[in-house]
Image (tube, rainbow, N blue to C red; front, side, top):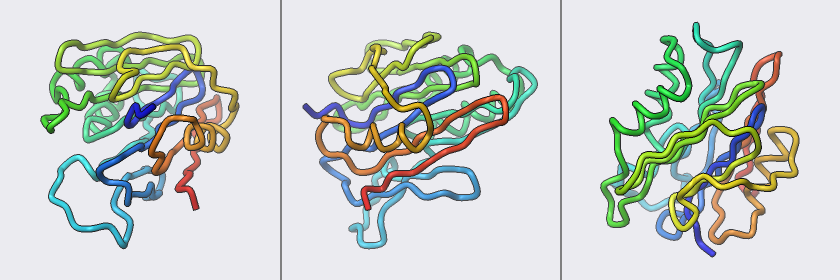
Amino acid sequence: MYIGRFIVVGPGLGAYRVSSRSFPNRQITDRDGLLTVGPTPDAPETDNPYVGYNCVRTVVGPATDGEVAVVGNGSHVDPIAEKLELGYPSRDTLAASLLALDYEKDDYNTPRIAGVVADDEAYIGTVRHDALLVKQVTEPTLVATYEENSPTAYGLAASDAGGAATELYEAEYEHAVCAAGVEVDADGATYAIENGE
């Protein structure tokens, strides 16, 4: 089954996977702790604005108890992180940013998906053409751009960033391109990248 790009988040652990039929020549790169999806060196040129974006960003803000991670499938990751740095609560930040940017205006009305992962809590959200859904989750929860576009419990076996990135990359869903995982604990955030190499 093809569910497109998806995230899984729960307290202390989150991951994101790029799945694509249209733009498979992408990878995740580490830009000094900011994980960015972008074209591989051999990718054909495109003017599609949804191909490159930050997918994992960690921040510390006055309303966060230590470092938190934002994961998502597009340009909304940055305003979510910026609002957290300013002190907005996680739920409000997800709702405001997803609503402001709305779903992607492509041929498929692709939903935007995002999560905020802290050491002891997590929030997940999506904005579709027909709904805005944001909820606090206490167990690993998946939301995808297609088919699984409402938050659903997900049996994530991994317990660290590397395991989460690999597990999502190897998940049975079709057209895996790359994945990233992030673990958040009392000492801060650590992350891992799986580019299928």
